[in-house]
Image 1 (tube, rainbow, N blue to C red):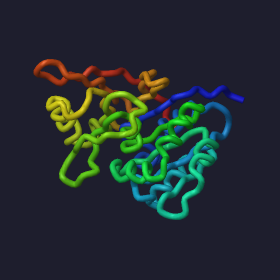
Image 2: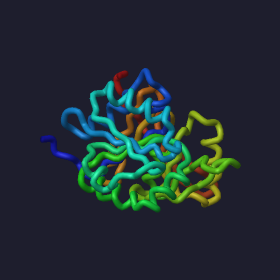
Image 3: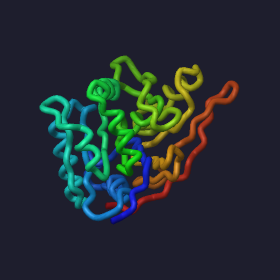
Length: 237
């Protein structure tokens, strides 16, 4: 049996299985971190309101990657969450409305279960809402009037902004929030890029798009600073 590494979190900036059904390199990367054959992967699609179409795309993608896929619902009959989550090798959180997702999770006590799962070696990951949720703060479009900072779970320090190159308002909004002191320094992740954290520290950045990357974001007197992080290009799956 493969030895499971504790406290692995893989945050994808955008363009996971649902956006690019012809390239599952990032999804394959997440599964590979679990070790072993036919890893068990659980989708948590709360942020989309448990969209049937999104769930179907997940099953199609992860079944093609020879994973044992399942999902959990909060808007129908909800199973015993601790038992379900701790049986998994990977938990994948989908994109959508992060604020509403976290409110539902907190009502059901899921954040504590996810922390326990991470400590036991379950790989945590996700895209967009499923990327920022692990940080202390994230840049979210959960509100209709623009991008806002949002307090998240705090498994990772600092803040995260996904879709850094994929949505034109992301970069200037993150800069403005940082410059105004409304959000902590952190990491910006472009579409097609994943930041892999182990034990709370960034271990590597990987991408399925040549030239795509992530950035460490900081604030100096009078300026917001982007420090590019080189990304390893993954083979196309």
